[in-house]
Image (cartoon, rainbow, N blue to C red; front, side, top):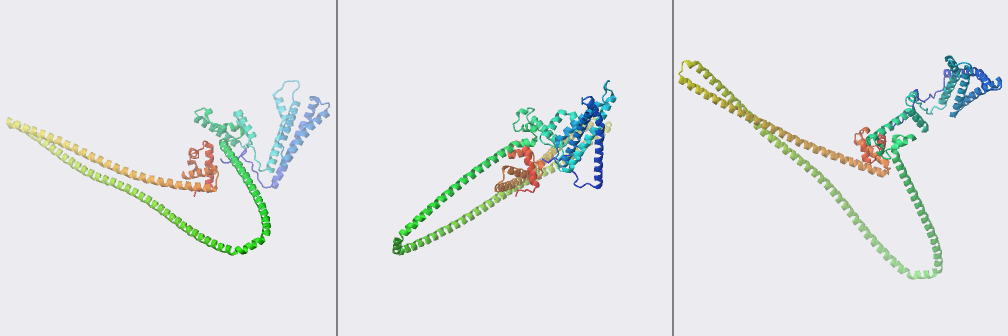
Length: 583
């Protein structure tokens, strides 16, 4: 989550210029102070007489002098507290509560001044209200100038102090109850930024709507962890902080358990070290006792040992020579056995390397055989498609020839029909001079010719229709064979894509395994491992953080909280921005 930069309502911010005041600025500041003192003097002068007279006549002070002392005491008290407030602000030790008594006493002065000008024996009129308000203008104006000076001094002497945003008055008018809750939370939990508080409320409302949509309007079905943002919002928690709380508490509990286990192991180690040191001290003491005893025994049996040593010197020398010879033979045998084991290990290693190389060669040969089989299959399919296409082309040409012959026959039949029609016309023209028998014979012949022509035309139409059907069938066969060829090519491309995807998955698995081994070697915590896994998922998604959905992070890391998944994704983005890349 990005840090929110607070600004004041005026939009000027809280940063101040570190430069020192120029001469003109100093003269301006002096003039402002002089005018402020003049304003204070005017206010004291205007209110003194009215307050003293009102205190004597209406507040039952014994004399006018006592009323004047009362007025002087109130004005001096106000001025003293204002001076102390400005001084402590200048010393970077402001007293926040001192302004409230100043405001209270100033309000009392305004009331007393207004009361002194109130009508006594008649009802209030509009001019009376204006007069009463006029008595309070100068004191209120003076308090505003004092507050302005105090804020200016505070910003000059404490430029790094963050100012608290004020809530717009229009919000107080439009939503007083909700604004009061926001004001209370800002003051209770130290939230200085009003826009930040609004953003928190909007996130909480959006999360609550998401829960209602998830549980179809019944939020009571939500889990305790899912209801945490609503329950922790009055205590200053954001939605992300509340959702991350269970995991943080579990992590803290795990760290406490790990710390307790570490302390227990340290205690056990210290106990074992103490026992070992005690045992060492005991053995050292025992060794000293045995050493003293050996010295005594040596002194008492020195003579006997000297005598026996001279007698058995030759025997010990021979035994030592034999023992040395035996040890040399045993060492040589062990050396030969170690050399044999080393050679056997080298042979096993060479055999394993040869087996691995043979397995690799066998795998490559299998892939080549598979690729060759796929290529043969595709070649057969293409050859069948080419042969079928040739047959279809022959059929198409034959159908076209048949269609052309049928068309010629149809035209011949048409010409014969026209000739028969011409004969009929000629017969009609010569009917007057021909005999009835010849006319009947010609008519019968013409009718026969017409019937024959009709039959020939019908046969030609039938042959044309057959040729057209053969052509369409050949065309359909050609399209089917083309479709089969396309299917074969598609299968080949799918096989290539599957092989490429398998290779990509293998490379990704190798990268994941190397990353896990590196994390094991670095002894990372579970959260750090999870963040790095999310970073690798972002890289696999193209490097864009927003393209990796939170649901996929929840599924891969087995977390139920969207806020936790969002935090993992944000930390992974920061890790990638810092230069993290899995080897």
